[in-house]
Length: 405
Ligand code: LLP
Image (cartoon, rainbow, N blue to C red; front, top):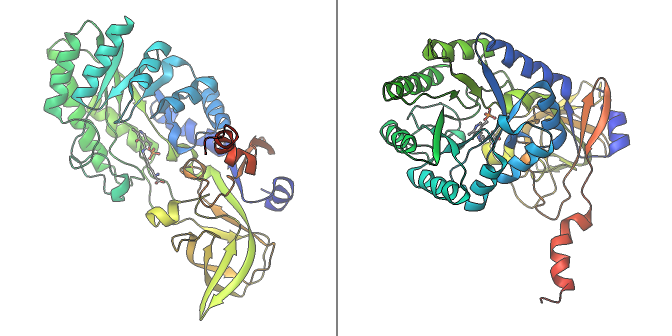
């Protein structure tokens, strides 16, 4: 990738995604499940750019959404409504109503109260709601505590006994149709064992429900497969599929996977320009034009992203913290990064930022969010223009103009 000309053409900071990589990842996931009916519902939260959704949709992906905003994105991007699922612990009434009206594939239910709420809304709308219950299997995904979701201390899903109760309730309701079972135990998972445990628990429940004449069509195992940021040994899609299928046995349910990071994480690069070098005592800092508002993962989870200088052949290197202009000490993109001497205008590229990069970016410090570019068939294409200052203040200016203050 010619980062220099991309910087000249689109300016920095800039997100760049290699769509060919996304395609390879999608195809490897699809192939792993080829022995069974399967659907990959891309986790929109990882990177919700409409062009990313459209591209994945064309490859055959559905979408896993956690807000009605994400459902709307998926629909606008052309994803078939029968491939859209709606998850999340706090769905609002208007969101549930919208999902029902759109007749999406199913709503993943996360509590007893929510199930009753969906029933009430469905009854009012005279629509039968297809639902799936999210199981909390109480297994340890052994990942960063902030992104672990399958332990009983986490807010997600319901335990097996409650789930069984909810399925029986749904079966007896005129307005609910139980069609699936769902589980998502966490993110950036590198160990296959917790998946084996969780899917065994799910499969056992599916069997027990069958005995009660509740036949589920969808077995949704969530997402979470980790990627290599540094030297991690990751789970191969084939091994993941084997673990799931071994537990599923003879069942003819369609397997759903909600991969996010696995599909897009390593497709992404954040291109940034050096503003200054500075030293505080012996500590070297490289100040760049990207900041924690563009990429919060290092500051928030202490996440590692490889950082490299573009077109620098110079051997002499020393370690530096790569930092942005924001007034927080957690505003760093990398710590102790080995880098050559850098001058104003030199380019650095931060890797592995395709997932939870732009989608977690903000306008903190009244900073404009980056432009995004897709690399498709060897050519760059703009998929989101850079924000303008006017974009940032628009919602407030309206109120000033109305004379509210
Ligand atoms: N399904 C559900 C219900 C989820 O909550 C998530 C992610 C996924 C699927 C996709 O997980 P993935 O395949 O991408 O691991 N911001 C954090 C990650 C948060 C993940 C939240 N849920 C990060 O930057 O590491």
